[in-house]
Structure formats: structure tokens, C-alpha cells
Image (cartoon, rainbow, N blue to C red; front, side):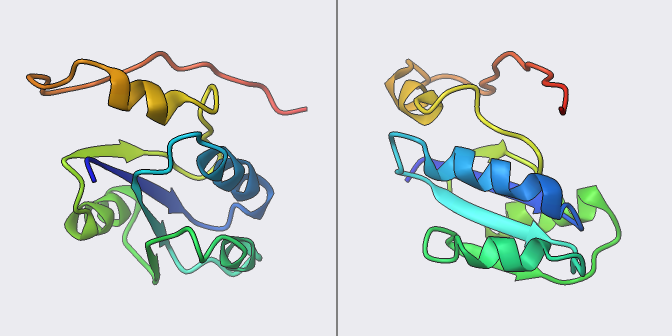
Length: 121
């Protein structure tokens, strides 16, 4: 497995579902999914529970901020490449992971893509 997706979240029950749906909708599911929740108390953990069969590693404990949570995810990751898909983020299409695996990345140090900002309605 080349890719680890790390999702960082804390008390974002209104946004985490979109992120989870975007990840499980990928046409290529050959990735490790790590979720680091900062100890949410607003229902975020209950939403994540619906995806427990797909989440490979789930951590829910207080942290000292987003970078501390990211570092927890990095330490658990086994992928050669890391993708931070934080709570509220979503992939632009269902074939992003497929495109990643089809890309010529043998000598790449960094892989990046465009970001589209989507306003909430």
C-alpha cells in the first residue's frame, strides 16, 4: 500500500460526513485510512462510527492542536505517501486515488494538486 490518508477532526459533526463519503466513494480503495479525532463531544465520533469498517486506525483523544494530531497520524501511517484529508475536505472526483496510482511518481518527492474552495450553502 503506497498511500495513507490521514483525517484530522475535532467537533465538526456537520462537516465530517462529507469527508467520509468522499473517501469511501473513491474508485480505488487501495489505501490506509487513519482518523485522528481530538476527543470530539458533538457527535463527530458517532458519525465516524458508521465508517469503522473502512477506517484502518482510529484515534480519539485530546491533543494540543492540529499539528499534534497530524504528527499522531504520521506516526501510525505505513504508506509511502501521505494525504491529509481533514474534516470538511473532500476529493474533487471519485477517481483521484485512481489517478494517483496511474501517475508517473517513481522519482517524485512531492505530489500536489489544485484546491477548489466550495462555499457552504
